[in-house]
Image (cartoon, rainbow, N blue to C red; front, side, top):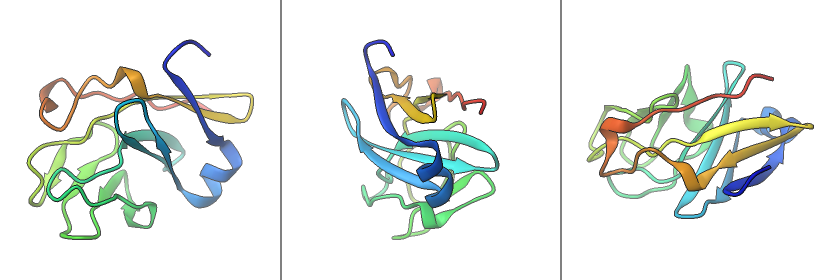
Length: 123
């Protein structure tokens, strides 16, 4: 893998648990396996910076367990709730049964949502 990519976890682990946290280059990153796709976002809610957990993911949406703010996993967009903006999103790849996240290349930040995007791996 090229610079900026982090070997996050095994495919089997992410598929079994549904989520995994890693220390990204600039912020904690949450990886999710949902609906057959892989996603990576910042791991903190933009409202109160509470940690987002995998138990609160359904239908491509992660819900903050603290106040119920919801975010789209694909785009990072805040859907409902008190968050000040969307989540950062990161590129994800699957290679040789490993899940990799490119945490150095987020195209959005909690204060720069309009440029948000995400790519999900094809497994």
